[in-house]
Length: 494
Image (cartoon, rainbow, N blue to C red; front, side):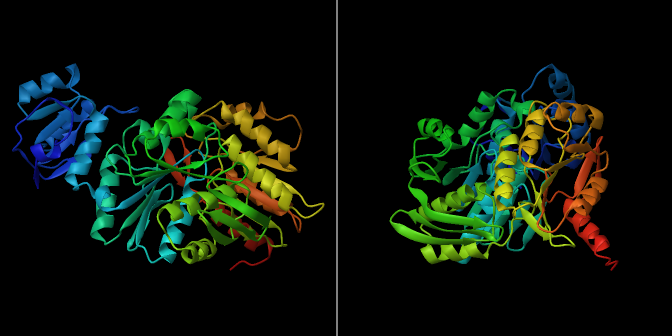
């Protein structure tokens, strides 16, 4: 149990409350309020926490924290429930969460990774390198929370402030010394990580995504850049010199910069490399050290992901042999170019790619890996109620490389599949595609289409185990569907 004064330490308070009010929990969800809770009324994009102040009070809230305003003032005045008004409710929630859990990030070496694509894979490589060096690390990202003794799904790339700070506190309590956190543009814009003390920030790349939320590419980049502006002196920014946005990030950060690149001059760079369907081999020069790379990962963009992880590892002073063994031991990142063999020797790949840039990089890489006279098939769709402008761009990117395209639902949400497909169709110029209303049937048909040597890329969902239709989550797994289909085609009913 803490006091209101402890929770609000360092928070920009407009109208204070009695500091000695005892608080036994903090929540932004009125359904999770019990007697003694502090309820933080966050103004959301779908729902407004101010509408649930009365509900929180009815459940026994001991303190209401809000931006104030007409919606809440009358309720609080009439019921005399202790309250406090803050200047920025989301920043306040971040500070309160950190105060509640004793600022756990200050006790960890925290690595934040941001960028449009590659965050998860880069994080997994860094985590594998740290494990190879016997360093206890916890990961937070798109695939959930992973740490020794902890595994949980969060539903968001970067959880809300309360869940994130609680997770970091669990890391500390579990004896972990390092954390790797995927930092989304939403999290930065909504101040979820405002009170995380990052020791390092890694930039992967920048391309179009999330314009439904950010409205413009400039806004989107400004959100990403906040992570680097947060870094204090003595920390480190790891930047991709092949991406021109890195030059802008150098201007917003006031700390040490380490660069990596495949093409441009950089501190960390391949001196030679080669790639096959079995993986990437090469040599990296980093800070006077020579690091031999043997990785099961494929795809040209994984060159950058490997380099980003090597750069981060050198900053953390990880020994070369641990870097090499950590990269080699990571056989697969779930849902990221996850390979399976079909019944006839063809290759099926499941990947999370969901932007035009990711499509171009993935499909161009797969095209170069195809045996002569073999074909590339692609299954993709576009999310409903999300960035509509990228839909024809994704279609054009798929058509540029694929011999056969199956358009199938990918979380249509409340938008009609027909409307989504009409937007996608604007990007097609050929007749190599077909539209499907059932993703399972599309996968079954595509796998049956494969001949020996062919590659089928099923993109967009990765390891997601659901399909969002309307507001309902229905179980669906691309990986499970592929495995079941391959068994059926092979005549194996077990």
